Amino acid sequence: MRTLRLVFGYAHNYMGPLILTVVSMIALVGVQLVVPWVIRTLIAAVKDQLWDQTALALVTRLALLLLGLYVARAGLQFTRSYMAHVAGWGVVSDVRRHIYEHLQRLSLRFYEDKQTGQLMSRMVNDSDLFERLISHAVPDVLVNVLTLVGVSAVLFSMNWQLTLLSMAPIPLIAVAMRAFARYVRPAFRERQRELGQLNATLNDNLSGIREIKAFTQEEREALRIGKHIHRYRDSLLRALRLMATFEPFIDFAFSLGAVVVIYFGGRLAFQQTLPIEDLVAFFLYLNLFYHPVRVLSGAWESIQEALAGGDRVAELLQEQPEVAARSTSCCRTSFCSTGPCERTSSSASPMLQRQR
Image: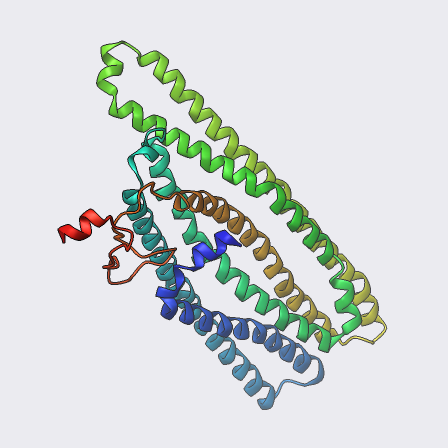
């Protein structure tokens, strides 16, 4: 939660783009819910009505409605994507500026045992992950939760028994997501640490290339860099192995839901208990139901990855200077949109106060 508060503490400067993102996502959910209803209406009309002018007018209206929905969906998807990226990269920009100003305030003793590449990695690579959280993970979670609620309401209105049966795999998915978060976040954190170590070693070697050549240490340093490259690769593959295990399990759970609907829904349709148009619409809505769960599982990966980077940024921002000096930036995690705060520390020494 501390890391989430750190990330979202910067987002208040971008409420406008975020509000547009949320509004477009809500409208997008409404569009997605209408499309299966259009197909259901068409199937019901084909089953119960002969081809005449009334049928032609109905088909024309449904086709035009569907075309309008697809055009609206394209516009809403653009708005959601672009506005989310405006907010996401704005947050990343503010975080990087705040980190740099925080580094300037730290005492020289802090830098005695720190590698420049490690600090650069936290400022650039780790903060870069915040964009995924703001622009992708959070919007995906919101829009797909809304979709789940809307689709669930429609499915229950059609046939609540079949809906409950189709939701049988959901507990398995929830348990898998909890277990995934337990193991994948440390793996992503280790990957970011190894990336920082690789950047730090590269920075040191490139800065001291003259000394390396003067003492003919090229081969030894090449082996050292190679070890860091392999360690980063191995840490990345460990995280990817967890992801590769998680995704097939989620897909298998979805397939169980489809099997349940085919078996029980087919029986109800043959027994004339469930109309054929409702069965078709049920499958369409069920696809809409499982798609958000699949997207949420992917968003869960992005959230864990971003939080791993956020943990490293938070550790850096918790470092405090040994001597309280004049503050040149905003406190805590907020950054003024107009620039650094013009605030003088009340802890300035009496000598400085007399000089003023």
